[in-house]
Length: 197
Image (cartoon, rainbow, N blue to C red; front, side, top):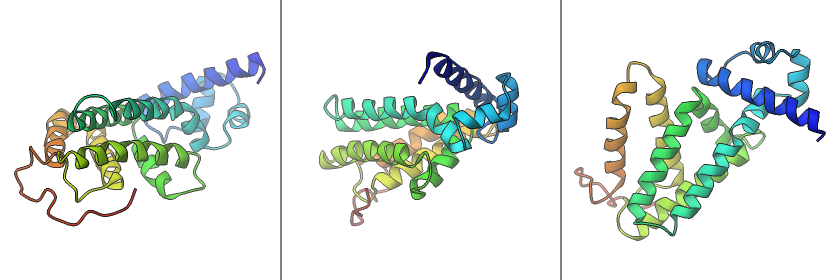
């Protein structure tokens, strides 16, 4: 890619990031183009779909969260590693309002521009969960798909203005329910584990 084209693309991504942070993922592509002082055709030449734009915008964060999960697989206690990654993942998903809805849909849609990144991120979290389960510190009746769904649920809570003040408290409740040493329900590990990734 030529230097001027790269500069234009980076500018579009920066403007899109600000717009999505302010208005959510449903912000008009026309509005993003207007803010970037380009025509809609120029934006679509770089990013032909909303998902392509989001994939380009979010890929660095996906890669960072995936890399962090990889580093945590060999560092610290398995339960601390799992909760640390979960907290970072939830915090990131709330940065771009509404992104988690698209991520949840992209997991099942192999044609989505976000599919590969989301599947890779889910697999990274699943490895941390499996490690904690093997150490006996996480309940065994959940899998990576469940963990990804909990990220989505916690991110949705963070997106709701009326619930945002309770987000940290609710995160702690969910995290303690995942960890067998902290759960009080007595259900941890009682059901047979499933095999989804």
